[in-house]
Length: 277
Ligand code: G3P
Ligand code: MG
Image (cartoon, rainbow, N blue to C red):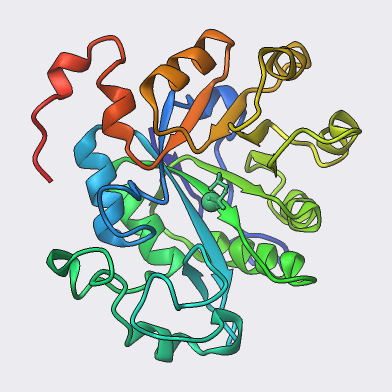
């Protein structure tokens, strides 16, 4: 399912015309590839998103951050140290410097040459592969709104087709900015654990979904969210039995680093076995 976009209308506000973006239209799947398929290929790389697709995912989740010169790159950590051959903070480096780094070799030599992708590159690949995209906004303190603004500008400049998009963040100010600038794009609030006052926050921000850490997630908490009418998405679930328990509680989707493990226990799994990456 792709969302057709209109051309610029000459106004100063977002020029993209979204044909529809209600949560039902997103058709969220039960399994979403986490950072691509982080246990199978280097996280948040184009190879990782291709791997997720090859494993049978219909959607992927990834993390976006701002560089010092205002570009949006897809990377989980605030520093380069763990997932590239570089060092330093992404927020203090320009895009050109980040593009020289290898973001695949740390995982295995077979992925050497992968680079840190831009948000635009990832959205283009998702559209090409027919992958829905959960764009998680990451930012250092105080930079959430600016990051959401840059995401809105990136989407606004997009021409052609985009896959279905769901925005999320642990940062309420980023979600609020997304609501202001991209009201037609569904958004969800992310929490490790459900906080007091969650329903007020979700309502104030116009959230379509709630995203929670799976560790410590109980049937009672799940029931509260389901009763309030929100699809619940749980991260990060790499155990098939736990995934099936969560689905039994009416969790809508789980984010998984190893989506193949969960997909193998899904109805109709036989047809998906034997995929080569
Ligand atoms: O969006 C779900 C999950 O990715 C949130 O945690 O730290 O893996 O980005 P994290
Ligand atoms: Mg994430």
